[in-house]
Length: 214
Image (cartoon, rainbow, N blue to C red):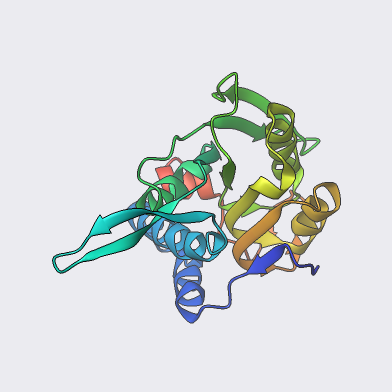
C-alpha cells in the first residue's frame, strides 16, 4: 500500500483530530465540526499542486504586484450522504466551487455500490474534481464514483479522492482500479470486519454526522 499518488497525512494536528473523531461519546455537532476541520486540513495537503497563474497585476496599499489566481476550475463531488460532512471544509478553500452531488449506497449483502442520484452536468464544468467521502472501507463505492467521473470526461490525473479514514484493503482496491488518481486521507486502519466496516474505524459516518443511528 504505497505509491506516489497515495498521501496519508502525517500532520500531528490531523492525528489529534482524527483521534477525537473516533471517540464514541462525541455528539453529532462535534462530529460535524471535526469532520469539517479535518476536511480543511487534509484539503490543504490535497491542493498543494493545484495550478495557479500570476498574470494579473493588482495593487497593494503601497504599490502594484503580480497577483496569484487559480488557473484550474475546481468542482467538489461529495458522495451522499456522508460526503456532505466534508463539503463545508472544502468550501473554505474553494468558496465558489460548484458542488456536484453523487448518491451511492452500499448494498448490505453484496457490499456493492448502487447509484441512486447523479447531479453531474451534461458537459464537464471543471478541470479538477475533488471526490469527498469520509470513509473508504471495501473501496467499491470509491471505485464506482471514479468510474462515473471518468465516463463523464474527467481524466484520472485530474481526480483527487479525499477522505478521513480508509482501510488498507479499500485503498489497495482503489489504487488497483484507478492508479492514475491521487488519494488523500487523514489515516488508515488495518482491517475490516465481516460486515465490511473498518476497525477500529470511526463508526457509521452518516449516522454520526446526522444523528440518525437506530
